[in-house]
Image (tube, rainbow, N blue to C red; front, side, top):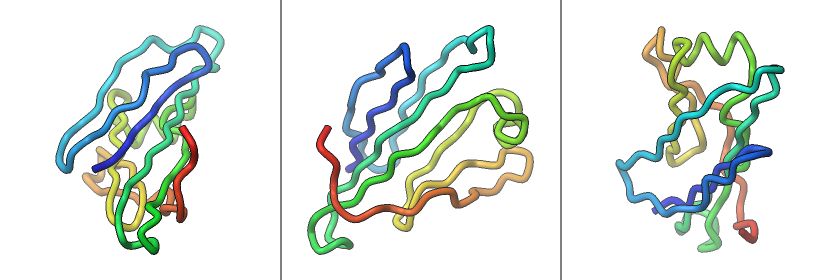
Length: 108
């Protein structure tokens, strides 16, 4: 199970627990002055890290042409795998590794 908590400066989407194979989606309008930024904290409880779980804290949306290209100018898809966090490069139909899990859990 994953715990996911995403937010921006203006919008806190709240925390939620996700079972394996489930999705969490949202939509928004980009800020007119190109400052839209969303980030997520993701944690997992497992025995891979001495029973203490692992976490990742990372940006999931920011104004960037390379990001828009990977998302095919529409939907950004982030994937949590055993070794870390990936972004789906839609035009290439490939998952690209972005962040590895860090040992331990942050307080949320």
